[in-house]
Length: 229
Image (cartoon, rainbow, N blue to C red; front, top):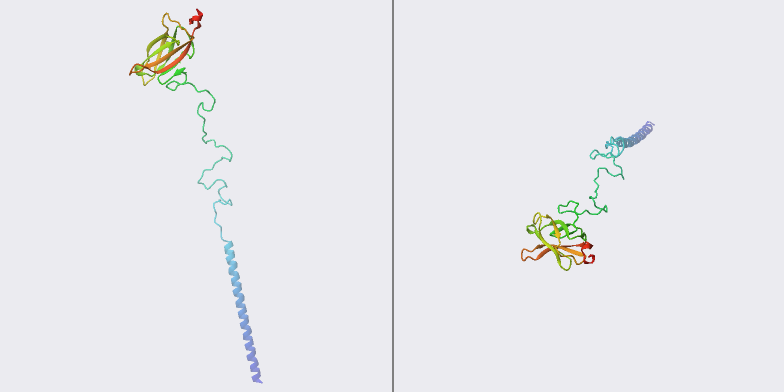
């Protein structure tokens, strides 16, 4: 009888030991699970609590620099899109260009004011005007660029020479020299046509032949013509 009780006691103790072991293992598993969950939550909380460094306002959130002012390396400007920059350079048309105005005649110095009625590489005539009416005498004014400032002229009516002569300019080539001389028709000679031709020329240093000839025409006073007599 005692032996039977003793066996029952041993079996009960063994069962109790097994139960306790199971409880301990179960409790250990729960502890590990809780620890894992706590670590995950702790890591998540730590991640969520990490402070985001201030970007200086570049993202437009709580920045100390207003949007549009830049990062301080470029100067701010008040210019708005579509507005002209008052400081920008604008090409201005050159004086007289595109205005439709007539170009002013120029002298050899480039100054406006003198209009040449006839010219070539050696002579420039200022007066008389082309086809101007003249009498038995008239003045010729202009500029010459000739060797030693010397040149000659001939005045004719298409049939005969009415006058001729030699002239000296104020200076010789390569500069332009001023001149003024009077054409005086020879005594006893009258024009036989309504138009006279003045020929100004330089004599060639080689053979004396006319070079650099400049020709202009004038009209005679009707009183000089044969029909008016």
